[in-house]
Figure 1 (cartoon, helix red, strand yellow):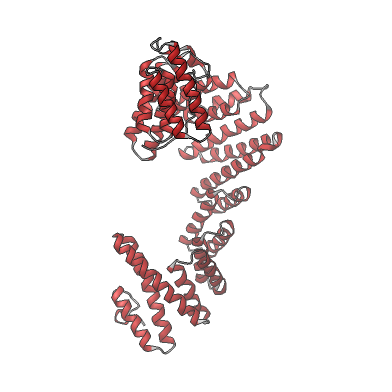
Figure 2 (cartoon, helix red, strand yellow; figure 1 turned 135 degrees about the horizontal axis):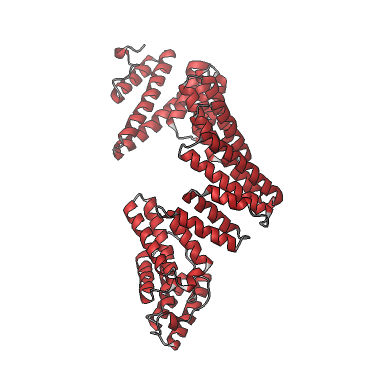
Length: 483
């Protein structure tokens, strides 16, 4: 069974609030007080063992607790959660189901079961198994609904779990937002609850209601008001962008979101880095809006600005990469080359960026710069036969120097591509076979021509013959019109 979440070991029979409820009361008195006490003691020792990193001892003690009190709900919950977290999902989930069956009104048992069912749902969704994902989500909701009217269900932790489940249930966003708003009203100084409410507003499309509430809060911490109102603007912008509703409104909302988060950071300097990271993404997402509007200059500035605020923002780097591709398709090689030059600064360890920059330098006649860029690409990917071949190609056809070095690299490219071709054929990967045949063919063509220009006609002829054996359809072959 898959390991999905790390669940804390339950050391006592508690409600969602953490308030202790005697085990013999929670299971209808079916365990006597002595057995319940013994089980509780063993659970505590198990918790201590787990804290010390002794999982085997913790499991042994929890199983002993279950033997001591076979119908104790808290022990079923503790062992079930522990086993699930350890990767024994089938038995762990089974124990949690059993705990819920022993006492259908136990809020803590229902919450533990729903938490694991939600984790199961997320796992199956990540695997593309929507049937199992939906089934586990439905079970989680039904489990929580069953105990929703119990007094312990008023606990904040239980209601937070309900919000998390409802946000994933189709049509549950409105109820999730209403419940999240209740939680925020009860504890307005809890940043985690504000973040949950913003998420619920996004799911329930309740942006206006959330913004109106924040605007009306004069007593709320000023930084908190700015931060989470700004986050709500950003959520609305993202919704509009993703749903192709109103691009200009999305851009405007991202701008407001940026302003408000930076205002929050001025009030809370310890949040400055977090604000900068979010602002970076707001700008890169705005860049994508301009990209799809074909306003490429504006998109470029937004992507570069986003990267400037956060060099780890891959979204901004990818945006510039897509712009380069678009400029290349439009035939604007100078813009594409400059874009790749920027990418080589933004992501200096990306060999593909250096390779593409080198190619565009070659295509625009900047051969020395092309050679330097290819050299850097080879340093990053020393076993890439395509890059090695293209680096040598610059020496042979454009710089006309160091042909001994070019020969060495062509041979290296040939050897690497032959090995890669053999592996691709063994794997039955037709796409890789075609790719490596093309690379090998290029290396053989270049070697044949290099030897021919040096008057080494026998070596040249050998490589033309090798090319025929690899791909007799190559246009460079003399019989196919090649020079």
